[in-house]
Image (tube, rainbow, N blue to C red; front, side, top):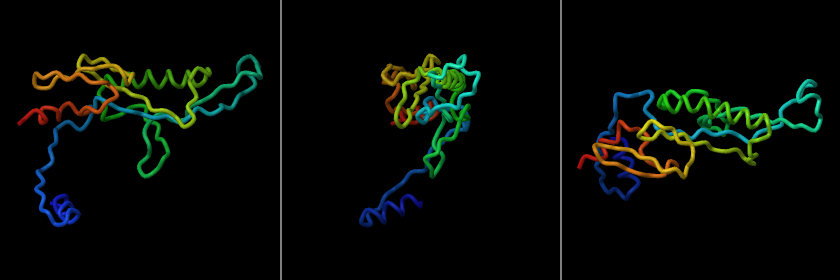
Length: 165
């Protein structure tokens, strides 16, 4: 009712009909795509025993890998995402370890402002991290093929509703 009233007021009083929202019973582990972020790596404090006292060696660190805090630009570290599928969470653990290691060893490309990671679960349970890899999703016998980085419904429990005419 609130949405319908708002639309009517903002569209020169043209009446809008709004259908009820749809939902599913799944409240956890339903999301098949997440895009966590990290800020640009910063120089890490060195102690005297690091790198065999090699003063020329510089180490970097990433403080948080996660999502932006609501109403802020601050990143909240999210080692486990309760709405992501289990395969994504398992892969997230590995990706986080890799990024922290790459930062510490100077192997991580140093983005000026940070970067966004992609974790997309495909039909076969494989988790893809390359935006340009094609993945498949099967819904009610229909197979969809799309780039992992493109938008496609991230909640597979909602997909069958999209095939009903």
